Structures are given as structure tokens and as C-alpha cells.
Amino acid sequence: MTKSHPAARRTLSVQIACALAAGLFAILLASPARGITIDLSYDEDDSPSFDPNGTRLMAIARAAADYWEWHILDDEEIHLDISWDNLDGENRKAKYVPSYVPLDSIDIVLSTHADGATIPWFFDNTPYANEEFYPLNHLLHRDLNQTHADAAFAGPNVPLLEVGVEAFALADSPARGSYDLLSFIMHEFGHALGMNFSATDDDYDFDSADIGGLDVGAFEAEGYELVLNTALMNDTINYPGLRRFPSATDILATHDQGGFTNFNLRRIDLFGGHSEDWHDTLNWIGGKAPEWYNDAFARSGETVRIETGLVEVRSLLVDESSKVYTAGNSHLKVIHELRVGNAAQGTSGEVHVGNFSGTPWLEAESLKLDKGLVHLTSQGSTLLVHGAARISSGGTLMGAGTVEVQGELNNDGEISAGTFFLFGSGGDLLLRAIDNGKLDLDGGQEPILDPGVSAFVLPGQVNDEYGRITAVSGNLRVLSPLADAFNGTATIGRGRMMNFYQPWSFGGNLAMRGGTTAAEAALLTGAEILFGGTTTVQGIATIDAPLVTTQVT
Image 1 (cartoon, rainbow, N blue to C red):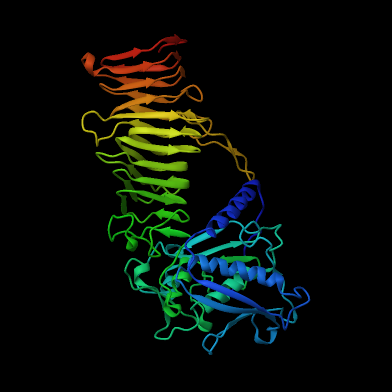
Image 2: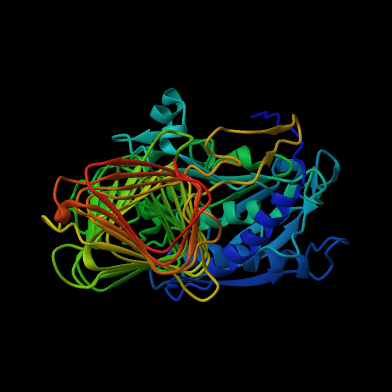
């Protein structure tokens, strides 16, 4: 199979992403849940001059074994003999040689030559990082051409099944133009772990418990490969500068002949539809609920609930009309980023924290509320963000409870006090910056430079402060100082209050929509206000705070 790929260009963002990737794989391999043991030994009979002791080969082989050990949790042990040889006459760069004698080792052979020349292998000195390759793409079943999907899989479509994990070498990377030894060894290890013969039919069957109870298999191609051309276990890895890792399809396919039933996927997608219980294993592709070392994705359009206890995930995406609910005294902890919705795709998600009782807690290192809703549904609810919290123009943070940020809360969307769960009162929404945190309630972004064109400005998003705060369904209490003057839009409804506990400056639009009695007044109160904005009043409105007025319109 021939592919054409443009040269990648290393940029600052690429360097940052690569650094993050290094940390990502370190966390991946730190999982406490290892099961299978892959023992390795080296056969030095045909060692080449470029690796006379096999140390370079074995370092990569050990990394390949570690990746597979992380993914397969069954308590088993296999032994593999690793060696070099000249396979030029066999027209292959690597091969798996099964053992036909019980307890004997399986041979994995890497070729030194192809087409009469030494193979330009890429020996990765940091095989647990990924800095030579970018970006790392995760392909899903729904990304496939339907004709190829039908040819590659038996059984019903599973749109969110991962079908490939790959990256291409950067233009200035030593991996560019070379064959990635790590990918080839992981491929041959896949054969050793079960993708070596489909005894009963022409596909590798998944365990139905790992795929929502469905009967799904990956069709076998010649040479015990997968038909799926995005998989690690497809011969399209024979391409210079390409790195692939085991995808969910590669991993789950080892069940058929390897007999493995316990898996750990790096990325776990909500299958949904079986129940609304987060802990229901049939709800998740891979047959287990995500844990602290897993990236979790809720994008099936289904609803899932956490009723009690602590749930930790590495990261969480809630998108494509999916909903996550926490209740009671539950604690959902996202160790890295919580992302809700995708404005670029026009899709949204929802996260609801709390019900009628308890003290539920949502905690994240960072929050990107891109399009959709984060809803605190009870006064005892807490949202804690250790780093940055970004509310984009299509995002809404609403409810009753406490929001605490240690980084900067930047609001380009809407912060709305009150929840319909608290009938009548709506409750109070408290905003607090802790440690060195900041509250930027009217948002505004820095200009974004496109190096291929010029700076571009999106009205309402860049260099504008159009964030909205509302106290219509409940009361808003801002406990900490603002990062800068508020130049967005503030709305206070009938019988509602907006209270700033620290002096602040106002230069935006204030709409006060009170009722016809004093009890129904729209109230702005608290500390001193440097007032220079525009106010619109309907009904009875009260400003009960010291004013320093530059203008009143």
C-alpha cells in the first residue's frame, strides 16, 4: 500500500505537545494493573555490526513488551526469543515463528537487510516518549470508509471503536525516512499474543463482554494480519516514518486465539445504552470502567451516572449530546483536562453535579467548557478547578453551589446563577478564586496568529469582552476580586441579587429587570463599584453599593 504524506514542520506547539506525550506515556506505563508477563531473551547468532550485542534491539523489544503488558491484564506468562537475521530472501522485514513444542519459546526475528541493502531502522532512544512523531492520531470506526469498514469487521458497526493509533515522523526527526523498529516489534508481538491463526472462521472474534454484549470480530487477512488497514496488525506498517501503537481493535482481537479476557485500553469510550450506571462494564468499550490512568470519552449521546464514591479518570471528554451526572456524595476527579463539547464541530455535552441532597464534588486540573453545560444542581455542589477554566462563547456554567478556581476562570460564554432543581429559590452560585487564582468574568482572548496567512479576529471571541453573567434563576455571589474591569453583560432578574464582595470596575451593560414590589427588586449590592457602563432598568431596581461614577446612561 502506497501513501503520500506531507512533511511535518516542528513548531513551538509541536514541541510542547511532544513533551506532553512523553509524560503521557510515562503515566500509561505506570498503571498498577499489569497482568501478562512477557519474558525476553536474545539470540546473538546473527548479530549485525550495527548492533553487535543486540542491546539496541532488546531495549526496543522491552518497550514493546511493556506496552502490550499494560494492555493485557490476564495473569499469564509467555517467553519470546528475539534475534536478528537476514530475511531479504523471504521478502520481509520481520517475522514471528510459533513454537510447536509445549513450553518452548516463540521466535521473533528482525531482518538486517531488504532489497540487498541494510534496512534503515529507527532505534528510538526514548521509546516510552513520542517526541520524534507528531501528531498522534486516534482513528475511530466511524472515520473509515464504509466499504472498508464492511470488509474489515464482522458484526454490527461500533462507531466509537478505536481502529488505529498512529503518527508520522517530524521533518527534522531522525525517524524520518526510517522504519520504526518499535512498531515492527509490537506488530510481531501481536502475532505471538494470539493473532496467528483463526481456527473456526475468518475473523478474530472479540469477547462480547468487552464490546457492549455485541458479537463483533475483525476479519483476518493473508499472513494472519488484520484486513483493517489502520491497525498495528496490518502490513501497512511497512512504511518509512510511520509509528503505530496497539489500537482497541488490535488489543481486543487477541481474545480469539490468545484467550485473553481482561484488557486495559488507553482510551475508553462510553458505549452506553446498557444502563446509566458509570460502573456497568457493558457501558464501556473494553469491558471496564475507566480509572485514573485512562482517558475517558462520553460521546455516544448516552447518559451515565455516578451515584456514590470516588471516580478518577486521567481526562474526560463529554460531547455529542452525552450527559454525565454525579449525585449524592460522589466525587468525580479528572486528573488532567475536563472538556465539554466541541464548538468547531457544533456538538455539545452536559455535566450535572448533584441532586437534592449530599455534597457532590467535581474536580479537574483544567476545564474547557467549549459548547454545552456544566450544571451545579444543589447548594452543596462544588466545582474545583486547579488550573485554568475556560468557558467559550457556546458554553454555560450554571447552578447553585460553589465554584473555586486556582488558575484563571475566563468567561467568554455565560455564568448563570440558579437551578430549576431548587424550586422557587433557585439557590446561590458562589464564585471564588483561591491561592493565586483569577476571575475574568467577561472573557476576551489574545489574537491568534496564523503563520501562513496573517492575524485573524473572530468578533466576540478575540480582543472582545463579551462574557455574560446572570442572576435570573438564582443569586450570584462573587467572593473574590476580578482580574480586570467587567465590560461584558450582567443581567439581574426579578427578586434576584448579584453581590460583589470586593471592589470592582464596571464598563459593560447592566440589565436590571425587577418586579413591581420591593421584594421583587433586582438588586446589585456589595463592595464599591467604579461605574462607567450602561444600565437598563425594568420595574424596581436597587443598587446598594458605594458608587464611583464616571458616567451613567
